[in-house]
Amino acid sequence: MYKLLLHVDSDDPAPMSIALSNAENFLAAVGQGEVALVANGPGVRHFVKGSQFGSRIASLARRGVKFYVCNNALRNLGIDPTSLVAEAEVVPAGIVKIVELVQQGYIYVKP
Image (tube, rainbow, N blue to C red):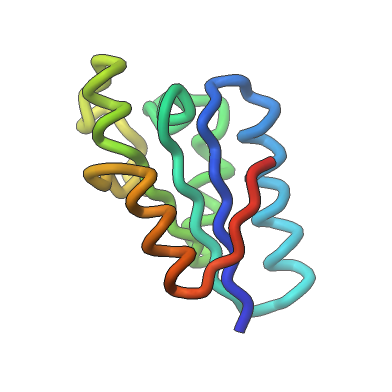
């Protein structure tokens, strides 16, 4: 089974849009696979309720995509974790989550 790890660390909407498209295209092409997206740094801003990506995140979560958001970045940027979309799972450190997923066999892609 294929495992894809997408990494977004920018609040620029272009990389986030590409990452979500990568997830959609991956699932369409392979049918069944595991997809995780880790956001850290300013990239965590895409997961605040009201973000332009909220509906796409929700749609992909219904298809099994996991979304991990870095608590260190949230704290550094002054973002309250309760302000995030329901699909976001807050992890202590995004970089640690990336390493864990790579060790579990996920292939790292940074759009």
